[in-house]
Image (cartoon, rainbow, N blue to C red):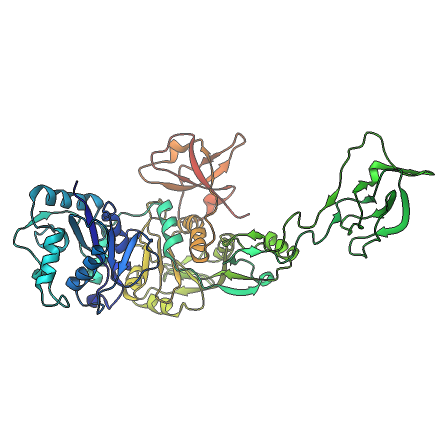
Length: 577
């Protein structure tokens, strides 16, 4: 059986792209390095050559050619040395550059199969024009090693210096390399839009985490724990009464002492056998207490205190540490700083914590035709969503900062993106389509922003984009139509918060959509819905996107899968009250 190792070249200077980290550029929801690693997933071992990348798993061996950026031949030589340290080197070595976003495992399998069947020294991919791609090839390991050894030095050598005499070309449809910004733009245009679930997963894992900071927890509402919350004190801190009643010792009847134990008061003196002391809920029980008997379970007479017949025998004592002990984890990292967490922290004597967030957002309304205040002029329309976006953002766990209006200009977004260093998120409404006035995508490319979500496979909302600027600010580009903007915000914004803060994905609310067949089509749809008494929802088959009237008297939105049948399970997004 032929074995195969893989070498993925993920370095280089990317001089034609301004020196950006080209393998990390996202096309179609994954970086080009991820695409390359996925294409060689069936190989026995994979070596990635380039700068160290902490997000790669331990099964990937990482090396760096010396000096860094000294060319593909030097990188291959370094990788072969790493593979030589492994037991049982493979017969074939796949060499692949991490700049081909559409290359698939099936294409690499076909290349390897051709190399095995033909017995050639190497088989290289040929693109649609017939041009050989020497950085997509399957080599005989011994041939590749001999080629390296023949050179005086591998540094700054051209790939053609390694090409063996007995090599074959194999046409592959997926060979589209990206060497320039225009190549990236074309690749993104060709990439299929992401499903909503894909987009959510991408932003959860591709957006940079916010830096952690240690703060007073009661001042961190909306933030998320960056480390577990551990108890500083036990709860209860000492043995306490669980009920109003009597602390008793020994057999009845008990002689009731005159002192009383109050919560927060001094601990009563220790009990002797046959004694009882009146005690309140939460009071420190006296030493020697065997049980607390509730008020309703006892009677007092001249002989003392007696337990009523047929009453249950209960201890009604909360022992020290019954709820937690010092050092116990009370909430894992990723837990939101909510009212419940603040209460737990106070009970555990914890005042500070390491948190990420909260996420602060600036709302950017775009378009010359939009007017917030004052009389409308010819061709203008009222801003009907800007005023409600702060409440919707708060519902999604985002704290709105302010709202600005951006006119339609060729370079207006460049300044907005460059100045977005005082917020963690820009929410931009409009300018996400392909029209002449839709400048957001061009500005993102121009300013070197990272674009993990280029489009959505969702109606409405297909033009939605998620990006990250070079300074680390996330960008959510929403469609300009009010309903499309609101629906996509509610569907995607919580996942952005999760990506920025490390909060775990929220549990989806699902149930049957009774009229799904009336709504579904070839693409997933999002539409308003009402709850029905028997459970589940009925959705609106038709919705106008130019206003929010369709949300009146509705309980929420439903995300309807393509070609869904009546009763199909759907995800429900509740609307804020």
